[in-house]
Length: 123
Image 1: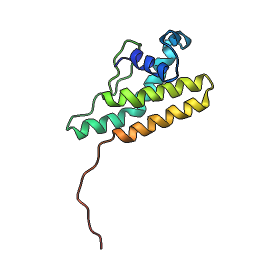
Image 2: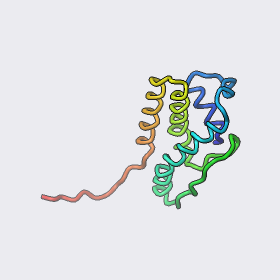
Image 3: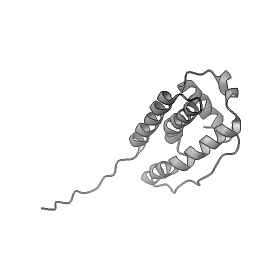
Image 4: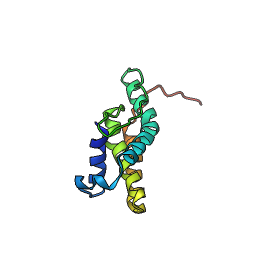
């Protein structure tokens, strides 16, 4: 998914049409996405490890047309919700910002792989 795709989904979360994308400077959106990439990279890495894959490179984006280099299920929900939260904060819509931040955190927890192991009886 590109930064612009995530941006359009975040606008939709806020009830804004795609035409509203001009309300936010591209470099602000890219900066918010980069902050989220750094925050969400450990979760993406955990998903890759559960599949037996090496961690993906932690790569910042610089333009709206660039692909986000996290696992798709991390980009699809938590990153989009985090971006919606950040945009809502910029508009002083704190209730919306809080809601979308909570949704981001909820989907992060749902996306983590289960840790399966033996139970040790300590009695």
